[in-house]
Image 1 (cartoon, rainbow, N blue to C red):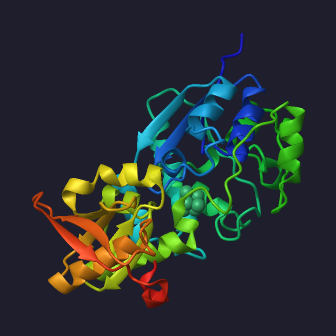
Image 2: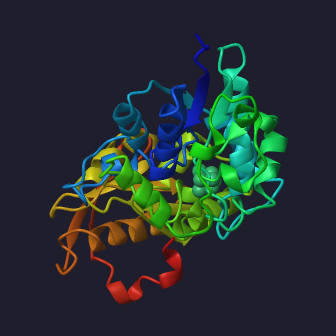
Image 3: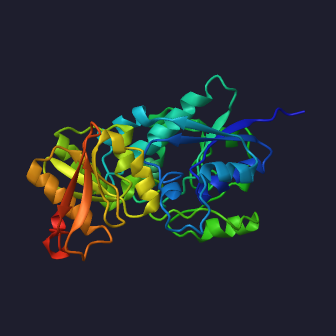
Length: 347
Ligand code: SF4
């Protein structure tokens, strides 16, 4: 009897990695999944916070995909190690602060490290040649294999036939003819393959798999670095950048304004670490004040809080301002008119 081979599949929660794992599973290989939590993932975070799109299932798609495939999923926290990728990408950034090529090298390297000593024979990714402008170019894909150290053990079942055979193909752990030659930005081949497998439901991330591809998010991260005079972050920083409306009225402080009940509830968990404001005479948002503000600036923050409350058209709104030590004081303020909020305050 031939020995059953073991492969580790990088599972993002999207269709491509799901299909790649399925192609190899179908060849009788034992497949397990791995998903790396970088802190910037869209998966399972804002999905779970915001009330918007309530009709969509709130789930972690990597877990859901693994369940659909019937494979075990390993969730690995890489928040600290990933910082280096974001802060100093050797291959630079994409259109925003997305260091995609370095990120792919990092993930393949982590997967390669992880399989060592665990009895896995090779690694699978859902990459498709030409799908992304920077990280999935023909000349970039060998860079991932080489710089990650995974080399010949990195199999891309959806586009393997566009490249020379890897070790799993050469030694017959998988049959090359049953792999694919997808090439380009069109999603049609993936959708057709999904249909062939009877896969009707899958996540369709717009743009990318993480917040670093998002222009507004990247602007907020840049602002964070500028305000601190340092390119660094902690997990809480990058989580808070995903939530609320961000307004910076002065270099020394910014406001994070909950836009809906789900966000207010999320911000509630951070309340004790920040000076925070909340209207009491009218329903309105919880507002965190990050940084240091003078008395005049606190008044401005209260007027902005009133502006985003249901008392925005009232002549006066009562706002409770609580400092980091839990000391509260009440301010009666006139809501700031929309026209007085400069556009360049918004992040
Ligand atoms: S979009 Fe984000 S997670 Fe995906 S490769 Fe680029 S940096 Fe990495």
